[in-house]
Image 1 (tube, rainbow, N blue to C red):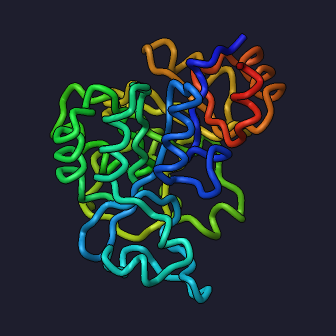
Image 2: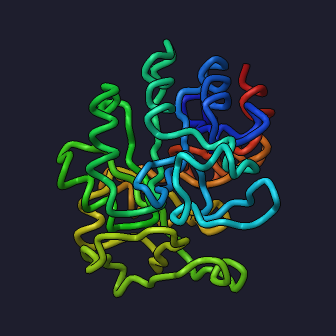
Length: 267
């Protein structure tokens, strides 16, 4: 049976009115969550903010790409932008909280790793961070900067369906290999990699864990990763019953949780 230490608060959903906020982080840490995940997007001026999508509605309902806005304008833009904290502010809050939970930092843009690593060092958080991304570009770069860093690649392990492909740029691994990409900067894109099963090659050697959709995971995939000591997490769960069923069937290591009621069921 899964225990509380295996539950990851996904974007602090359910812990505050808005996901990916400092209020949500503090509420999740106050509750006693052992692992929290949040997303990083980078503005036009190079400021890393906490937000998942590449774009958001402003106070007038206009959709604006985060890579096109200046961080100093987000309060005036209002809407979703008014609730986006900076990575610096969130790292500061995490460093000061007595709950020293693991921090899964999901990097949605690539080319800004040196800044994120510098912020993690400044707040003395490097030993608590698991660096997560759908972008191999950013994971290779983090590993260059922090050879001992824990690295997690999120990937589709079955072919993404049409709705997913409609909103994502889908790259496909050749024979399950993802070599170091030619790109070093990815800014304002929603993308990821389809690996037909478990990874092979250089990226597999790099990761300490992988994250895959709950509806794609198979026992064969998990057993393959476990043979090399690679942990497998899945997303996302809103009930304890589905979580426990998945743990029983597959032996998944960690679970991304999208509903506070799941955490409450453990209290």
